[in-house]
Image (cartoon, rainbow, N blue to C red):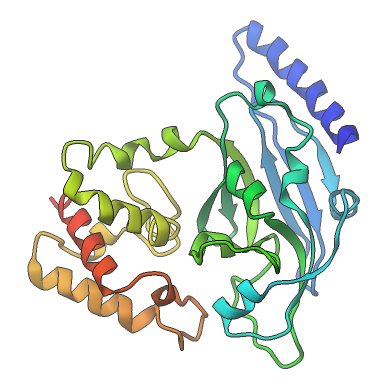
Length: 277
């Protein structure tokens, strides 16, 4: 990691020098990996300045081993899945607090326009792993989105059961400040505390696929475009369609029903009602 970091700071100095001449520069880190027969995929690691190119071998040289995750198997209704993974924190442990500045989270951009978000504190607290390979038991059907890179909760860790700890198909890691990232959404409930529970549920379960006010992924499109939340009938329709798709027998394994109950759905609908035209 220190070898990678030295290269990163070379580009950081170069970027800073160019900024002195009024040029806005952004460098990106690229990681290529072959895994489980999938085609060569490109991953990007975006830092404040700087970047370096490494292949899968270089990433795995940070220290991988084969691990299991009952957390993953429970969510996916699998049994005996194994992963080649490395501790996620190794990507950041050589950086001091001063070097990270106000950065406190990692945005997880995915190939399919899904977008997860993990705080650096949670990466350390729950000993999260970054899986570079997924080894499914024989005969298990893999949904199209289940590809590395994958966030993984290892065995022996008591992490809350939430969708963000299952983010897969990652092609980009971007360091962000959590408050700045969520600011457009937090502004909605600033003067309406009653909408806060709905916002929390939306952040935990919806924003990864359904962007709002420029925040989040867009794999599933905008919910405000799909439903008129000003209408009680449409709010009921939203809850009905959610339960009809995001259930445990969903063929694409997108079982969000295990993370949010009917009360939470009603609170999400109430929050989105505040934004209805």
